[in-house]
Image 1 (cartoon, rainbow, N blue to C red):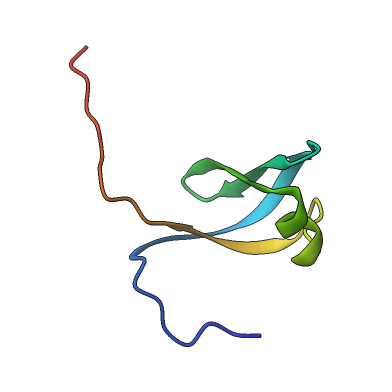
Image 2: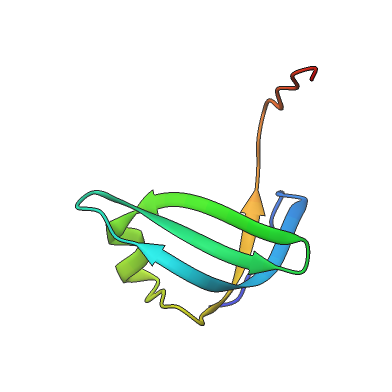
Length: 71
């Protein structure tokens, strides 16, 4: 499968660094050239995508809101 077109503009190529499995959802850490991106996805999706530590992935960030707090 290859992605031919997608509307998510924030895309980070990286490598799966760690997977923390849960019964329903799992946490996937992706190491990118810009730092770590963490995603929480269903455990079913982790299995269907055959994600493993070392897998090359594309992290796509799509958000309708970005909150900012003043420090």
